Length: 358
Ligand code: COI
Image (cartoon, rainbow, N blue to C red; front, top):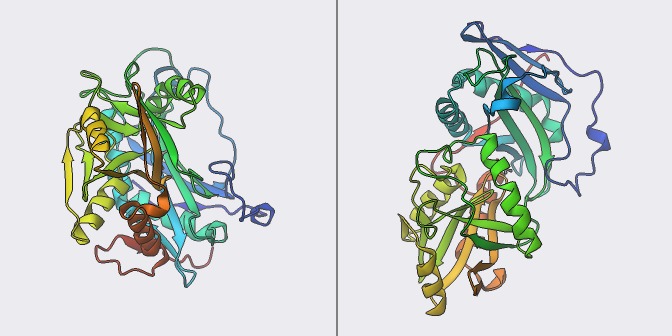
């Protein structure tokens, strides 16, 4: 395999057209993208080139049978203006775990890391300076075979593009626990970052919105009572000073921010518990006055506070964010790590390598 990435720069940049004080999530794209092909059993054609539409065959297998996976990661600027990644190798590891589950080829970690370093170095001017904003990086892979038939593809495409983003949730989110539809069952693909998981969440999410809630709190597929995650985030409960989060049992996304938050809480000496969490126990803790905070975590969401949860006929209203301790402290810590103002004890921060002569 020839790992050299060919680089073709765009003749002009769109960066000056962007209002960096007002960036809606996921609608602005930077000037370049990385592309690679899986052909004859190996990855090839590594190239960074101007961002553009791609052309696919109408019988493209991903469109019909759903072999499509993705990652979401971010680059930010330190207070000194240096571009930084946060735990980039973890995203490569998780992408390859998703690939294995979806019967797709793994993408070599050294090329993944080389590609994001080169792409983000080229797009440095696209990294927002404002606190809470970042350059979102979207690696994704899809089947590129051109035939009809439920079989694994023989060709795949891997692409990375980027775009500046503000906060995913501008305000605390309201949740409704879902007892009819399920997101994932143990043995299914819930642990993979598979595109179809998100497609399956859209109808229940629309119904939740019609009832006045921002997002769904997913419950398990068998007993419909064990908390799993929120559509775009893992979930944490602060009960009587301890922090609880559902254990990853095969149906829950293994969030990199989730893992980070657990480590940060441990560093701060706060007790964390990963276990099966019965929604009825959350209701009981609320009734007993012990439920102090609920927050979600994710790359896009970072740490997003939950304002209320509806379960059957019980509405759990949570304290205003200014009266919370744990969620805001963890958010500040992650923001501080990303800005390089808090000591990086775990070597999570990786400076983007500078590119010369491009
Ligand atoms: C992320 O957190 O980066 C995700 O991929 C979630 C997505 C729904 C925005």
